[in-house]
Length: 149
Image (tube, rainbow, N blue to C red; front, side, top):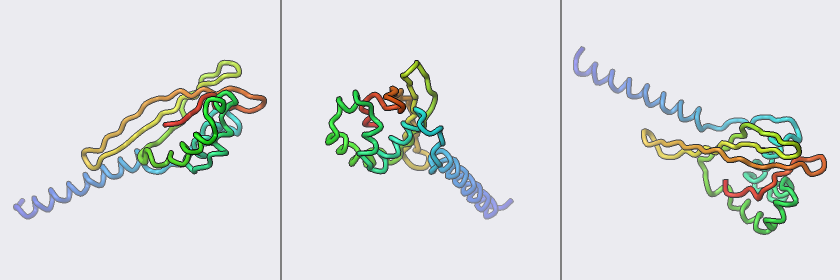
């Protein structure tokens, strides 16, 4: 194999490797459809809250908070948080994970993932965040002022 053929082979393998890495990154952090949960379930309430915050719908999101959580966070302060929520972490993904039930209280565990960098410097990190929900009447409500995810 001559020098020209080796150069073409090396370039070809480099392109294939680059495409492979790009596909892996796209699969890891590409857009995905939200999971579907039973309507009114704690997971559904938490997901609807997160979607409302991401869409800037402060009144809707605030309605998913329990009376106790609302008492800890005035609506005006919450609305300011919602207005700025999308600007904090553009490479963030939140997944609803396991649920632990204790009567009229539930803890849903979120996995928050962040990605950043480019090419070989691409980094990904994740942590788990428990979120408490409580039953108020017939509905599940988030029982803490859930901001800063």
